[in-house]
Length: 438
Ligand SMILES: *[C@@H]1O[C@H](CO)[C@@H](O)[C@H](O)[C@H]1NC(C)=O
Ligand SMILES: *[C@@H]1O[C@H](CO)[C@@H](O)[C@H](O)[C@H]1NC(C)=O
Ligand SMILES: *[C@@H]1O[C@H](CO)[C@@H](O)[C@H](O)[C@H]1NC(C)=O
Ligand SMILES: *[C@@H]1O[C@H](CO)[C@@H](O)[C@H](O)[C@H]1NC(C)=O
Ligand SMILES: *[C@@H]1O[C@H](CO)[C@@H](O)[C@H](O)[C@H]1NC(C)=O
Ligand SMILES: *[C@@H]1O[C@H](CO)[C@@H](O)[C@H](O)[C@H]1NC(C)=O
Ligand SMILES: *[C@@H]1O[C@H](CO)[C@@H](O)[C@H](O)[C@H]1NC(C)=O
Image (tube, rainbow, N blue to C red):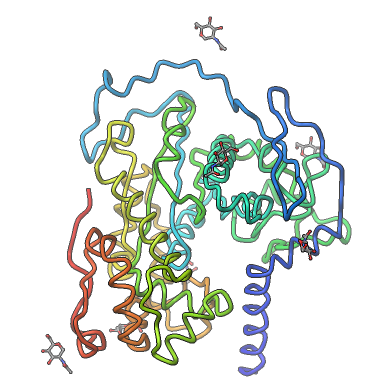
């Protein structure tokens, strides 16, 4: 019985990895349903995007909304550090959870997801944008990508799915989507009233786990979203916080940004396990202890760029410019892992969401679990034990490379450098300095 469960589990995890790595799903779903694109909404235009040498066209509104507001950050009362800015017109609040993969964002995101009826939670909706624009020419041009990300986020925070729909493949028909990435990850999409009764056999990827629902009706989803008090979106796609400034300046939005960071050494170790093919070279280097001492090496440059992006976003946030007053919070994975309840309370206070006992129970249940069936995306972990696992296995040489490449980020976030292997392995030496970021 136990081996059966393990086998099932391994198959499930493998399938998920394959999907993530090879865009397997999008290829399959392309075959399921192809529909000519509907023209863009009024005021929009087509944007041509080079895909693999040929031109792909995506609908892309140039001016997503008419700016007509008098939000003057300078003349306004600046809220104090702990004080929340006055809420805006609709009274709804909007939360973006910014992370990179393997930073424990599932845990924080999931705690919003567990919140229940007043929070409309979306998990990685930008996946579709990334898929549609995931083409060498464009992905190197971050300007295009980040603009698309921002405008999709802006609409989604306002419960409008139309721009996202233009990136979805297959395109929703009559606003009914056969495939929304990780629908099952969002309770809001799998419970009443968005989960409409299942009628006939329809192939839906990422269908709801606990209930059978009809394909996702985005009109209904949008109506439901508008009735909730908070939209919370988790995304690993945004690279620079600065690019999201227009969201704060949109008077319809009352933004809160939560940036989750983690020790880059741990992040690399975790990714090498979670994404073996993407991190093939790192794995080989770790095994053979031959790491290129070359700043021009592609993998090393990528790691550096990654660390620098995270650091620069955090610097923007921590400098606390007028536009971000009271709207930015930096959270270290290690603090969440060690003090889940305390950190969750802080996060809830920052967002203004009431900290319900249901969420507290959920945190208690999920941070001290001893379950051995930990999925790579699982939040069910003995979190303090989990936190330092990488220190037992990561080669000291590899740790040194990360320390060199990511040193500015590590210094900013308070991660201690190790000078020798003994310190790396000695778990009674904490590598996380006590720090408060506010
Ligand atoms: C991209 O181009 C390569 C080489 O020209 C070709 O083999 C491949 O099928 C193309 N892929 C797509 C998705 O068009
Ligand atoms: C902007 O506001 C002004 C004054 O309230 C109004 O006359 C104008 O029609 C508005 N413009 C738009 C595009 O909504
Ligand atoms: C990225 O694309 C934008 C819009 O097409 C263009 O203006 C810009 O020059 C490009 N940047 C780079 C670095 O190619
Ligand atoms: C989707 O939901 C809306 C709002 O409830 C409804 O009017 C519409 O008929 C639904 N669409 C489909 C295809 O069921
Ligand atoms: C926490 O675990 C207990 C015992 O397993 C269970 O009864 C309860 O429903 C769980 N609560 C949450 C919020 O998951
Ligand atoms: C979790 O791990 C920590 C550190 O190894 C240990 O002290 C604690 O007892 C563990 N908790 C549970 C519930 O297993
Ligand atoms: C681990 O570090 C602690 C604190 O610095 C030290 O007392 C202990 O001797 C170290 N253990 C080993 C095995 O080096």
